[in-house]
Amino acid sequence: MEDQLKAGGEYLDTLINLFILWGPKLVGAILALVVGLYLAKAIGRMVGRAMDKKQVDPSLRPFMVSLVGTLLKVLVVISVLGMVGIQMTSFIAILGAAGLAVGMALSGTLQNFAGGVIILVFRPFKVGDYIEAQGYAGSVKEIQIFNTILTTPDNKTIIIPNGGLSTSSMVNYSTEPRRRVDWTFGIAYGDDVDLAKKTLLNLLLGHDKVLKDPAPFVEVGALADSSVNFTVRAWVESADYWAVHFYMNETVYKKFAEVGLNIPFPQMDVHLDK
Image 1 (spheres, rainbow, N blue to C red):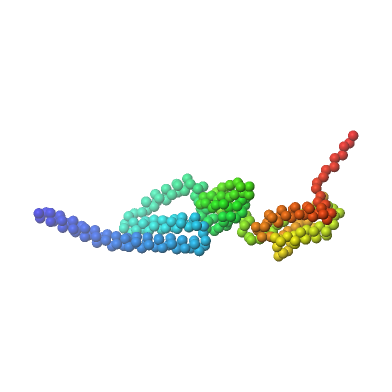
Image 2 (spheres, rainbow, N blue to C red):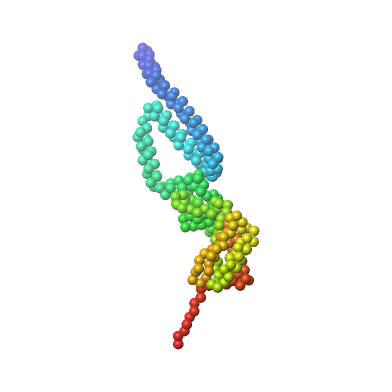
């Protein structure tokens, strides 16, 4: 009986010593865990509000909030484990090596993922814009996290990886509200240059979709091999670009014939020597 009491006293002393040694660390770790998780959640909400203010694509917002929150929680847990004396150096080294191996195996996919995040955050284009990039042109149908999907005017679907799209040159035809339409019209040598210039200006000024400011531009641009070429420019709303472009091509052809102006074309004379 005396031996049992002695053993119980030793166990109690051991527990008291352990509590004195580890108690403050455990209490501090629990407090750090609670506060850290709370701050991680709060920072996640702040990131979400910031993305709302910047009008980040809705498809990216929940993913980014979740990613930031998860990374912060992992950092909190690692810090708490270090506070209670668990050596995390080897564990972190193993995680780093595993992450490096996975990153090398998925380098192309990760590049496309990073490109998708960049596109969705900085928004160089949006759904509905007409762009030209990577040798293709079309209207943006969908911006996914790995790819961007375009639809061409003849209804073809083009899938472009976001990695190259985010790091190379791109033309966005829909960014500016106005665009300039350029033409080159030629008349035959000997035709009335002033009449041609007046005719072109009247056609432009008479079209309700051609903007008056900046004013249309018509000047002799080149004295070519078989024609006097006029450089013609006009500003229009972006949505009216092709309507004005095709209107002028057809109308100039008809009007020049009405006023006696000739549009030259290449000809070849063949002489037969008997």
